[in-house]
Image (cartoon, rainbow, N blue to C red; front, side, top):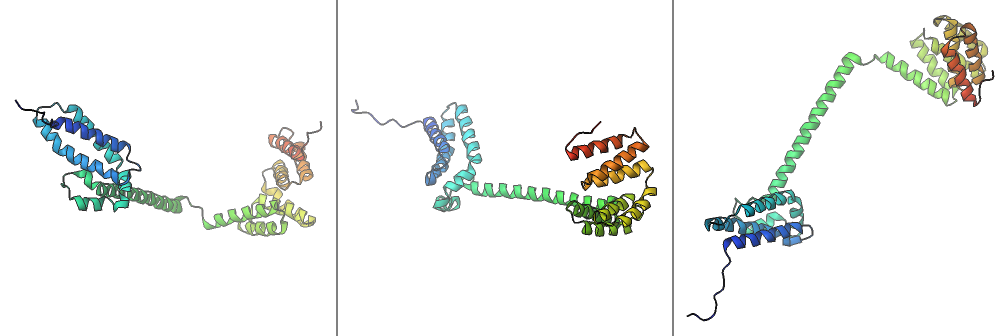
Length: 277
Protein backbone atom coordinates (compact mmCIF):
# COMPACT_ATOMS: atom_id res chain seq x y z
CA UNK A 1 0.00 0.00 0.00
CA UNK A 2 1.37 3.37 -0.91
CA UNK A 3 0.95 6.16 1.62
CA UNK A 4 -0.09 9.67 0.41
CA UNK A 5 -1.66 10.63 -2.86
CA UNK A 6 0.05 11.43 -6.16
CA UNK A 7 -0.62 14.77 -7.88
CA UNK A 8 -3.21 14.45 -10.62
CA UNK A 9 -1.85 15.55 -14.02
CA UNK A 10 -4.45 17.53 -16.00
CA UNK A 11 -5.57 15.88 -19.18
CA UNK A 12 -4.65 17.64 -22.45
CA UNK A 13 -8.36 18.31 -23.13
CA UNK A 14 -8.74 20.04 -19.74
CA UNK A 15 -5.59 22.10 -20.33
CA UNK A 16 -6.93 23.02 -23.74
CA UNK A 17 -10.18 24.30 -22.29
CA UNK A 18 -8.35 26.22 -19.57
CA UNK A 19 -6.10 27.86 -22.14
CA UNK A 20 -9.11 28.79 -24.29
CA UNK A 21 -10.70 30.39 -21.23
CA UNK A 22 -7.53 32.46 -20.68
CA UNK A 23 -7.37 33.56 -24.32
CA UNK A 24 -11.03 34.60 -24.30
CA UNK A 25 -10.48 36.67 -21.13
CA UNK A 26 -7.42 38.37 -22.60
CA UNK A 27 -9.30 39.22 -25.79
CA UNK A 28 -12.16 40.68 -23.79
CA UNK A 29 -9.73 42.94 -21.88
CA UNK A 30 -7.29 43.59 -24.71
CA UNK A 31 -7.65 47.37 -24.83
CA UNK A 32 -5.42 48.92 -22.19
CA UNK A 33 -3.68 45.65 -21.32
CA UNK A 34 -0.26 46.79 -22.52
CA UNK A 35 2.47 44.15 -22.56
CA UNK A 36 0.06 41.62 -21.05
CA UNK A 37 -1.57 41.38 -24.47
CA UNK A 38 1.39 39.20 -25.48
CA UNK A 39 -0.06 36.37 -23.38
CA UNK A 40 -2.69 35.58 -25.99
CA UNK A 41 0.04 34.81 -28.50
CA UNK A 42 1.70 32.38 -26.11
CA UNK A 43 -1.72 30.97 -25.30
CA UNK A 44 -2.33 30.16 -28.94
CA UNK A 45 1.10 28.52 -29.08
CA UNK A 46 0.07 26.26 -26.18
CA UNK A 47 -3.28 25.49 -27.81
CA UNK A 48 -1.49 24.50 -31.02
CA UNK A 49 0.42 21.89 -28.98
CA UNK A 50 -2.48 20.73 -26.81
CA UNK A 51 -5.06 20.30 -29.57
CA UNK A 52 -3.42 17.30 -31.30
CA UNK A 53 -2.62 15.71 -27.94
CA UNK A 54 -6.24 16.01 -26.81
CA UNK A 55 -7.44 14.67 -30.15
CA UNK A 56 -5.09 11.66 -29.82
CA UNK A 57 -6.69 10.89 -26.46
CA UNK A 58 -10.06 10.39 -28.13
CA UNK A 59 -11.76 13.51 -26.66
CA UNK A 60 -14.66 15.11 -28.53
CA UNK A 61 -13.18 18.52 -29.38
CA UNK A 62 -15.85 19.96 -31.68
CA UNK A 63 -16.86 22.57 -29.10
CA UNK A 64 -13.24 23.53 -28.39
CA UNK A 65 -12.43 23.80 -32.10
CA UNK A 66 -15.41 26.12 -32.56
CA UNK A 67 -14.23 28.26 -29.63
CA UNK A 68 -10.71 28.36 -31.08
CA UNK A 69 -12.09 29.52 -34.43
CA UNK A 70 -13.96 32.32 -32.66
CA UNK A 71 -10.86 33.36 -30.71
CA UNK A 72 -8.76 33.45 -33.86
CA UNK A 73 -11.42 35.41 -35.75
CA UNK A 74 -11.66 37.97 -32.94
CA UNK A 75 -7.88 38.26 -32.80
CA UNK A 76 -7.74 39.03 -36.53
CA UNK A 77 -10.42 41.69 -36.07
CA UNK A 78 -8.62 43.19 -33.07
CA UNK A 79 -5.14 42.98 -34.58
CA UNK A 80 -4.71 46.80 -34.72
CA UNK A 81 -5.58 46.98 -31.00
CA UNK A 82 -3.03 44.26 -30.16
CA UNK A 83 -0.35 46.06 -32.14
CA UNK A 84 -1.03 49.32 -30.30
CA UNK A 85 -0.83 47.59 -26.91
CA UNK A 86 2.56 46.08 -27.76
CA UNK A 87 3.95 49.31 -29.18
CA UNK A 88 5.55 50.52 -25.93
CA UNK A 89 7.58 47.33 -25.69
CA UNK A 90 9.02 47.83 -29.15
CA UNK A 91 6.11 46.41 -31.07
CA UNK A 92 5.20 42.92 -32.21
CA UNK A 93 8.32 42.69 -34.38
CA UNK A 94 10.56 43.06 -31.31
CA UNK A 95 8.55 40.52 -29.32
CA UNK A 96 8.68 38.10 -32.25
CA UNK A 97 12.44 38.50 -32.54
CA UNK A 98 12.83 37.56 -28.89
CA UNK A 99 10.52 34.54 -29.06
CA UNK A 100 11.43 33.29 -32.56
CA UNK A 101 8.10 31.47 -32.99
CA UNK A 102 7.16 28.72 -35.41
CA UNK A 103 6.60 30.44 -38.79
CA UNK A 104 3.34 28.53 -39.15
CA UNK A 105 1.91 30.34 -36.11
CA UNK A 106 0.37 33.24 -38.06
CA UNK A 107 -0.67 35.17 -34.93
CA UNK A 108 2.94 36.21 -34.39
CA UNK A 109 2.90 37.90 -37.79
CA UNK A 110 -0.24 39.99 -37.41
CA UNK A 111 1.72 43.21 -38.02
CA UNK A 112 2.67 41.99 -41.48
CA UNK A 113 -0.94 40.98 -42.17
CA UNK A 114 -2.25 44.38 -41.07
CA UNK A 115 0.37 46.16 -43.17
CA UNK A 116 -0.50 44.06 -46.22
CA UNK A 117 -4.22 44.71 -45.68
CA UNK A 118 -3.64 48.46 -45.46
CA UNK A 119 -1.56 48.35 -48.61
CA UNK A 120 -4.31 46.50 -50.47
CA UNK A 121 -6.90 49.04 -49.30
CA UNK A 122 -4.65 51.89 -50.33
CA UNK A 123 -4.06 50.34 -53.73
CA UNK A 124 -7.78 49.79 -54.25
CA UNK A 125 -8.40 53.39 -53.23
CA UNK A 126 -5.77 54.65 -55.66
CA UNK A 127 -7.22 52.51 -58.45
CA UNK A 128 -10.68 53.90 -57.71
CA UNK A 129 -9.35 57.47 -57.71
CA UNK A 130 -7.54 56.83 -60.98
CA UNK A 131 -10.75 55.49 -62.49
CA UNK A 132 -12.72 58.53 -61.32
CA UNK A 133 -10.01 60.86 -62.62
CA UNK A 134 -10.07 59.09 -65.99
CA UNK A 135 -13.84 59.45 -66.19
CA UNK A 136 -13.57 63.14 -65.35
CA UNK A 137 -10.96 63.64 -68.07
CA UNK A 138 -13.20 61.89 -70.58
CA UNK A 139 -16.18 63.97 -69.45
CA UNK A 140 -14.20 67.20 -69.83
CA UNK A 141 -13.00 66.22 -73.28
CA UNK A 142 -16.51 65.28 -74.38
CA UNK A 143 -17.88 68.53 -72.98
CA UNK A 144 -15.18 70.61 -74.66
CA UNK A 145 -15.65 68.91 -78.02
CA UNK A 146 -19.42 68.58 -78.15
CA UNK A 147 -21.26 70.69 -75.57
CA UNK A 148 -19.03 73.52 -74.43
CA UNK A 149 -20.27 76.96 -75.55
CA UNK A 150 -18.01 78.98 -77.76
CA UNK A 151 -15.81 81.61 -76.10
CA UNK A 152 -18.00 84.49 -77.34
CA UNK A 153 -21.07 82.99 -75.69
CA UNK A 154 -19.15 82.52 -72.45
CA UNK A 155 -17.97 86.15 -72.58
CA UNK A 156 -21.46 87.43 -73.40
CA UNK A 157 -22.99 85.52 -70.48
CA UNK A 158 -20.34 86.84 -68.10
CA UNK A 159 -20.83 90.44 -69.25
CA UNK A 160 -24.60 90.20 -68.79
CA UNK A 161 -24.17 88.66 -65.36
CA UNK A 162 -21.69 91.32 -64.27
CA UNK A 163 -23.86 94.11 -65.70
CA UNK A 164 -26.99 92.98 -63.87
CA UNK A 165 -25.00 92.43 -60.68
CA UNK A 166 -23.61 95.98 -60.78
CA UNK A 167 -27.13 97.28 -61.49
CA UNK A 168 -28.57 95.50 -58.46
CA UNK A 169 -25.75 96.90 -56.37
CA UNK A 170 -26.64 100.41 -57.51
CA UNK A 171 -23.49 101.00 -59.57
CA UNK A 172 -25.37 102.01 -62.72
CA UNK A 173 -22.35 103.39 -64.59
CA UNK A 174 -20.38 100.16 -64.19
CA UNK A 175 -23.46 98.14 -65.15
CA UNK A 176 -23.99 100.24 -68.26
CA UNK A 177 -20.38 99.74 -69.35
CA UNK A 178 -20.68 95.95 -69.07
CA UNK A 179 -23.98 95.83 -70.94
CA UNK A 180 -22.72 98.11 -73.71
CA UNK A 181 -19.85 95.67 -74.23
CA UNK A 182 -22.33 92.80 -74.29
CA UNK A 183 -24.49 94.66 -76.84
CA UNK A 184 -21.53 94.90 -79.22
CA UNK A 185 -21.37 91.10 -79.17
CA UNK A 186 -25.16 90.73 -79.49
CA UNK A 187 -26.42 93.78 -81.41
CA UNK A 188 -29.96 92.43 -81.92
CA UNK A 189 -30.70 91.56 -78.31
CA UNK A 190 -33.74 93.59 -77.33
CA UNK A 191 -33.36 92.93 -73.62
CA UNK A 192 -29.89 94.45 -73.61
CA UNK A 193 -31.31 97.62 -75.17
CA UNK A 194 -33.99 97.71 -72.46
CA UNK A 195 -31.47 97.27 -69.67
CA UNK A 196 -29.26 100.01 -71.09
CA UNK A 197 -32.25 102.32 -71.51
CA UNK A 198 -33.44 101.78 -67.93
CA UNK A 199 -29.92 102.40 -66.64
CA UNK A 200 -29.59 105.59 -68.68
CA UNK A 201 -32.90 106.79 -67.20
CA UNK A 202 -31.52 106.10 -63.75
CA UNK A 203 -28.48 108.21 -64.65
CA UNK A 204 -30.71 111.07 -65.83
CA UNK A 205 -30.12 110.58 -69.57
CA UNK A 206 -33.75 110.27 -70.65
CA UNK A 207 -33.35 111.22 -74.31
CA UNK A 208 -30.65 108.62 -74.86
CA UNK A 209 -32.81 106.11 -73.02
CA UNK A 210 -35.80 106.78 -75.30
CA UNK A 211 -33.60 106.23 -78.35
CA UNK A 212 -32.63 102.83 -77.04
CA UNK A 213 -36.25 101.96 -76.28
CA UNK A 214 -37.20 102.90 -79.83
CA UNK A 215 -34.41 100.66 -81.13
CA UNK A 216 -35.55 97.78 -78.92
CA UNK A 217 -39.27 97.95 -79.75
CA UNK A 218 -39.16 96.23 -83.19
CA UNK A 219 -36.95 93.48 -81.79
CA UNK A 220 -39.89 92.12 -79.77
CA UNK A 221 -42.68 90.10 -81.30
CA UNK A 222 -45.33 92.61 -80.20
CA UNK A 223 -45.84 95.87 -78.35
CA UNK A 224 -47.29 93.86 -75.46
CA UNK A 225 -44.08 91.82 -75.22
CA UNK A 226 -42.03 95.03 -75.33
CA UNK A 227 -43.93 96.69 -72.46
CA UNK A 228 -43.90 93.58 -70.29
CA UNK A 229 -40.17 92.99 -70.86
CA UNK A 230 -39.35 96.59 -69.97
CA UNK A 231 -41.69 96.38 -66.98
CA UNK A 232 -39.84 93.30 -65.74
CA UNK A 233 -36.53 95.17 -66.10
CA UNK A 234 -37.88 98.12 -64.11
CA UNK A 235 -39.14 95.70 -61.46
CA UNK A 236 -35.72 94.08 -61.06
CA UNK A 237 -34.28 97.48 -60.19
CA UNK A 238 -37.26 98.27 -57.92
CA UNK A 239 -38.45 101.11 -60.15
CA UNK A 240 -41.99 100.16 -59.23
CA UNK A 241 -44.03 103.02 -60.71
CA UNK A 242 -42.37 102.60 -64.10
CA UNK A 243 -42.89 98.82 -63.89
CA UNK A 244 -46.58 99.30 -63.09
CA UNK A 245 -47.00 101.76 -65.95
CA UNK A 246 -45.55 99.26 -68.45
CA UNK A 247 -47.68 96.43 -67.03
CA UNK A 248 -50.84 98.50 -67.43
CA UNK A 249 -49.78 99.51 -70.95
CA UNK A 250 -49.44 95.86 -71.84
CA UNK A 251 -52.84 95.03 -70.36
CA UNK A 252 -54.49 97.85 -72.31
CA UNK A 253 -53.22 96.21 -75.49
CA UNK A 254 -54.12 92.69 -74.30
CA UNK A 255 -56.47 92.64 -71.28
CA UNK A 256 -56.25 88.83 -71.06
CA UNK A 257 -52.46 88.66 -70.92
CA UNK A 258 -51.50 86.37 -68.00
CA UNK A 259 -47.98 87.80 -68.03
CA UNK A 260 -49.40 91.30 -67.68
CA UNK A 261 -51.57 90.41 -64.69
CA UNK A 262 -48.66 88.53 -63.13
CA UNK A 263 -46.41 91.59 -63.51
CA UNK A 264 -49.04 93.82 -61.87
CA UNK A 265 -49.26 91.38 -58.97
CA UNK A 266 -45.49 91.32 -58.60
CA UNK A 267 -45.34 95.11 -58.49
CA UNK A 268 -48.00 95.35 -55.77
CA UNK A 269 -46.29 92.61 -53.82
CA UNK A 270 -43.03 94.57 -54.03
CA UNK A 271 -44.88 97.64 -52.82
CA UNK A 272 -46.19 95.66 -49.89
CA UNK A 273 -49.80 96.48 -50.62
CA UNK A 274 -52.78 95.19 -52.56
CA UNK A 275 -54.16 96.23 -55.90
CA UNK A 276 -56.90 98.85 -55.69
CA UNK A 277 -59.99 97.83 -57.62
